[in-house]
Amino acid sequence: MTRSIRCLLILVLSVLPIAMLCAAPKPDPDLDRLQARIAALDSDPALADLGGLERLKARQALAFLQTARSRDRDQALYLAQHRVDAADAAAHAELLQQQSAQLDRERDQIMIDASRIAAEQARREAEILRLQKLASEEESQRLAAQAEAERVASAQAISNAQAASAQARKLADARGREAQLARKEAELASAVAADSMTDTAALPPMHRDRGRNVYTVSGSAFASGRATLTGAGIASLNRLAGVLGKSASLQIAGFTDSQGSDAANQSLSRQRADAVRRVLVDAGMDGGRITAVGRGKADPVANNASAEGRARNRRVEIVVQ
Image 1 (cartoon, rainbow, N blue to C red):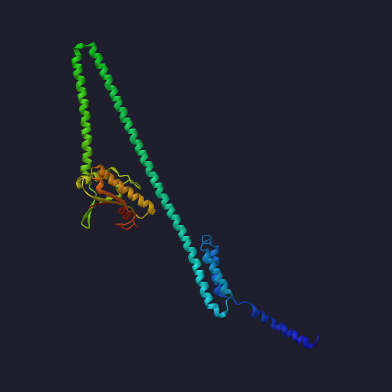
Image 2 (image 1 turned 60 degrees about the vertical axis):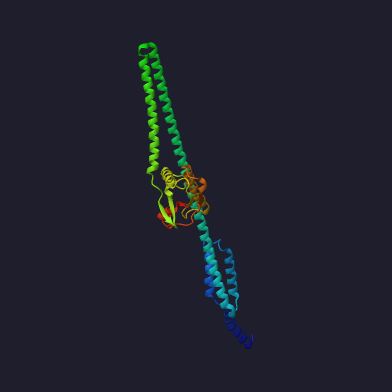
């Protein structure tokens, strides 16, 4: 090998590393940072399947940034940053929507379970009343059989002793009159007690609104989660019917708090308004002059964020026209 060839070879070998160094891609910290954010979204089990469209756009923007020329790099970096931010926001927004939907389903299920429990409790109470009625009827039959046995014994005694027959008949008649008097006294006492409960029942609270009297039946007058009025609630409405008179014109509106679905709240508020209307009509008021509507969670009178506020919002308003 000649000296000139050796010199040429040495020169080529010395220049080659410099050329390779120039050809190697320069590190891009902005691209690495954005790619790391996309990789973090992909590796998060809660977010991996969310925001797919925005994530695809982000990857396309990163690919464009990676191959962008120097004069286009600033615009490509801005676009890639915007797309990665949008992908992150879309994934978290979809996660929040899923969590919110799950919470709504769980809350509705809780309300359904509460209604089912209340219905079961009402069924049990009805069964207890039925059994008490049967026991009362059996006791009445036993007393009637006992009275019949006494009558037969008395008749036998009369047949055996004519002398005592007149006295025995008088005694039997007296006992019959006493039993009849006792029954009448019991019926009168029951009627007086019923009238007393209605007469002493408190009227629903009243306030003035735009020149009209507005009576408010609170949610405590109903069984929990149901449209069934309690005994105290019925007594209060019966007294209100007596105060207003048969010819009064009324508008009844039911309201709920903000918990539960709109459909469930609308249905419950209308059922409670109808229940109040039925009691007033049964008490003698003109049904043709009474309207009833359900307004769900509309027009709250207190903050639904507290238990006290929600309790005030669960109400039925009776507006005297």
